[in-house]
Length: 147
Image 1: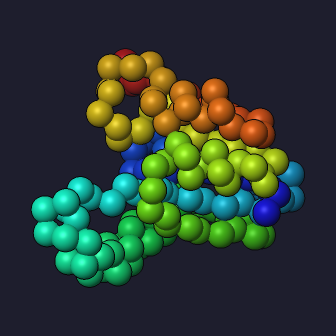
Image 2: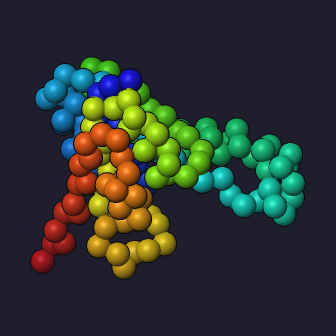
């Protein structure tokens, strides 16, 4: 793979990270892989794996559309990098991004996302990636709040 991998969710911090990764990929002339990792709901425990898996295709298509929308917001009319891949994956966000980092030159994430630990200065996914990624990591800080 090589190039830059950026992990996104639908948070403001993810848009900032995506903008940074887009600019960095363009400056370096490398490919950019934009990844959103969503965790499957715990529905299968209640209704069984067959019923839960029937929800995957529509949910996956919706997640792909939301990812394209997020990229459009980050590009804000500017050209995309020459080679950009969009991926939606199911699994643990930290584990999936660390796995992708094995073949990346750089891994980019926002400082915080949509996780449940909003009081932390750095999000749990960013913390896991910084501590375990096999490649260089950039954690893009949040923009200062308007005064």
